[in-house]
Image 1 (cartoon, rainbow, N blue to C red):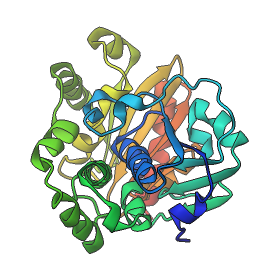
Image 2: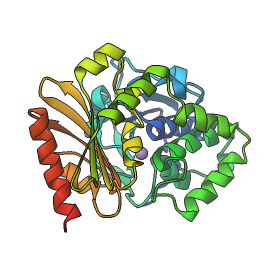
Image 3: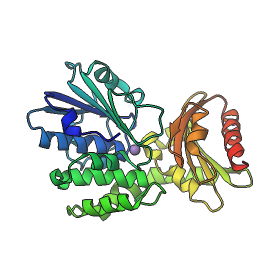
Image 4: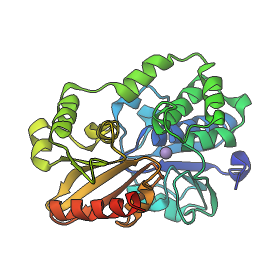
Length: 317
Ligand SMILES: [Mn+2]
């Protein structure tokens, strides 16, 4: 299960790194911390990150400006890393993965198998950054690496709030803030701060939300019209599902935004009773027990009915 990062990269002259489309804090933190770590430990190797352009709230992480989001043609890489997902979610970077000499997959999502030649998949760990922390040598950490790992950990644990936070997670967090970056500001600016329109869309979604199953399940929607009126995209809707979940009595929150005429992207958040990953898997999605996602197709009412039906089965079990 555990691998030796530097051993796996031994002799490699060209190393590529990628993560999932719509990169979140854990994805950006993990690809950039790995880039910094490999450059530091293997100075002879050329290390490069290929990733869909992340939100600019992450621009303070070292290496952000060097991220390649154009996916130019490149010679095959000796080693190619896929972090925080499988090779099916890396978008255009898949072409590098396919041709690489050695493929390495590091992830913490619930999956049947890794997609690499070497895999380190641990769904028992709260974030890919926490998993990378274990794979890296603490003695090689510096302020920039520590900050990148910290951002990933806070984003995937909801700032040490979700049940995926363990005593180990907190010990690692404690060690990381010892490097002296301004963590209260990072938490506020990358996790909590919203633009005015983001707050407006969240408010509108909460106001128009509907509860089902004796108010234990709540559904919120942002349709295309709203996205056009407010000029918001998927990145602007982060956090809405958590806000729905924070309503008293709600055991499962369902947030949908429209991606096509009859297509919706779904995020699920749940308490112990509902396994969100299991519900999402019914629609070809996945994730974690308490937080998962999928895409549903059809008329909105039918999509909601189907989702509620899966959740009801679990709530009533
Ligand atoms: Mn993650």
